[in-house]
Length: 149
Image 1 (cartoon, rainbow, N blue to C red):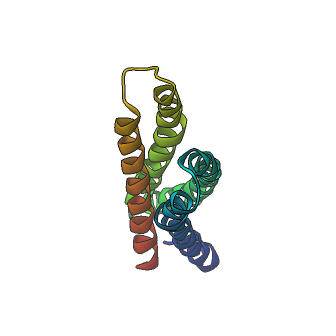
Image 2 (cartoon, rainbow, N blue to C red):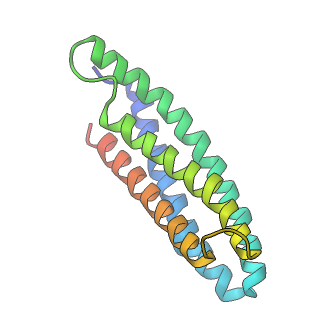
């Protein structure tokens, strides 16, 4: 038993567009900002872009989580799956990457830039980049799985 066709189709579209947004931010906007602006200005611009992306990711993940959780519950009630589906786990992973990357690591990066904290800015930037890349891969996997239904 799967969700109604329009809901399933829109979930695939949302996940695909979301993955495109992440790719656009990470592969186009960030390098272009540093190529066109002074490093401090590029950093300020991208801080705003990543803030908007984090809030967008939280909203999309929460909305898709509700849709997928309902589907997983219906399948579990019919004896055809688990309430903890692979798609639910992927969305939880995306939520973790967003919260950890933006709401935990970004403030630490600001402190490191000011000379505070135990971690270097470069190390924290690497962690933040890895979480962002992992989030993109998780969303791509989610879109792939939904498109295969």
